[in-house]
Image (cartoon, rainbow, N blue to C red; front, top):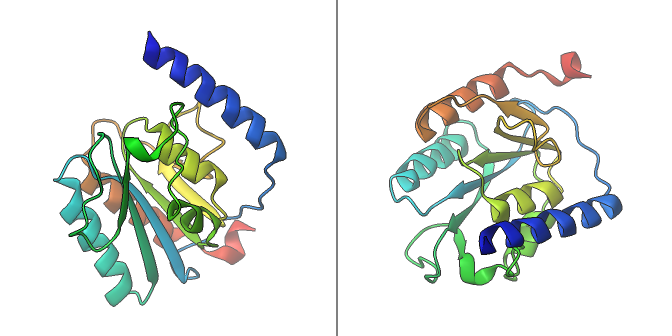
Length: 180
């Protein structure tokens, strides 16, 4: 019951902020992108090497500048031994809005592509995606989340690794001249 009340206020404040938020979004493929952001749920430690390997692939093989932000869905602190920023539940308001200072630069950074690499609802990560200055936001399919993703990809029982492979495949297929 308490969780439902928190989600009600999350949606209320999100809709209120969305009315003021104006951002221009357009299709961007991997070939055109230079800056890529990745949001993911780092609660499950099995996700960490998947995201780490993918971000390194983008940096080394494709020469992209990549920033990663992980969310730990617990009241624990940050995992300082990782090579990316993290935040946890204690860094969100009672209605799931991220409030940690290093999250604001991630939201305001002008990524060419923001990859939302989490397969279940995560209000804190969805908030960041919604208000991100990213040109193109990609995430898992959810008909009720059109405000936080510009392109959605179905995940029907897929693992995070399968989802990342699918995202990569579709982003390689996008050509800016054809998408306009």
